Length: 94
Ligand SMILES: [Zn+2]
Image (cartoon, rainbow, N blue to C red; front, side):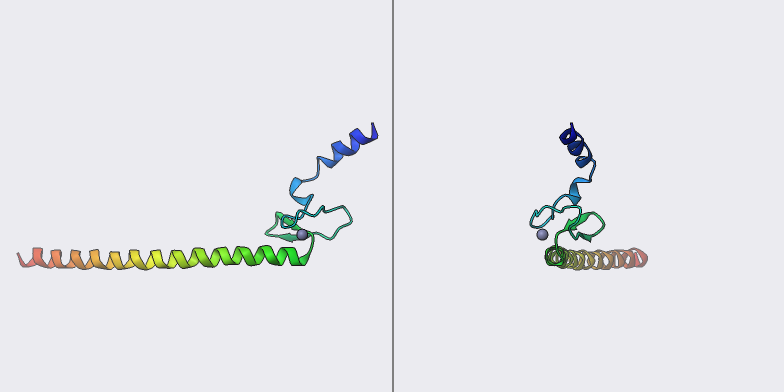
């Protein structure tokens, strides 16, 4: 019966706090838990730092690709704006 209850109460703990999300090391009630972004738990500062670094690398890649997309679309907008101006000028002249 005791094991039934401990399993029951164990299942009430949020799953994401049970183990390090980087190395999957079990996080016991007396372990230090390093939180990141409010819902990710790590066993150590090192594991958390590694996750932060990989997230930042992902963000840098995303920003780089977003910047090149934005550059392309702003150039396209400039081209179409210039085209509109020419057309408007032509209309005014005509
Ligand atoms: Zn870890």
